[in-house]
Image 1 (cartoon, rainbow, N blue to C red):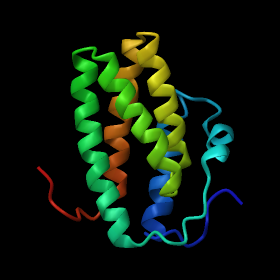
Image 2 (image 1 turned 90 degrees about the vertical axis):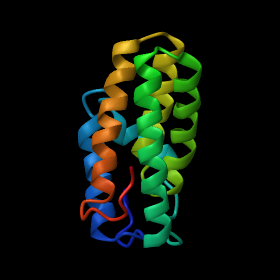
Image 3 (image 1 turned 135 degrees about the vertical axis):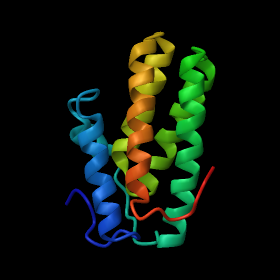
Image 4 (image 1 turned 45 degrees about the vertical axis):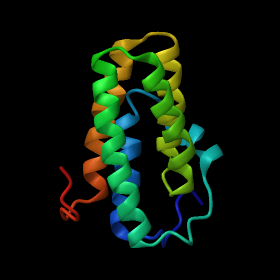
Length: 137
């Protein structure tokens, strides 16, 4: 079993989980295998928690994009660590893998790779709230 059938956000969550796998596959070819170590039971996640997570992820993606632009390795590593901790606990183990890989890329000063992760993360965040949800600006 790779993804629970009834994660808090229902089909929207399944769409976001599939998008995470697709968007980051070119950056982490074995993301599905690596994600297995971050998989947890997500029965307690409801739409409100998912909405708060989506808002937090938008802020994280924006901060990460800015940190990549200025090549701030510490800020990138901090965001990577945060992603690693949050992803799996909310039903997106691929995002935990992304966080770990992002931290490594910042540590080794692979700025192009960091920027690619930030760009894909911003695209992925858009899949969390396809109906528009809460305006955030």
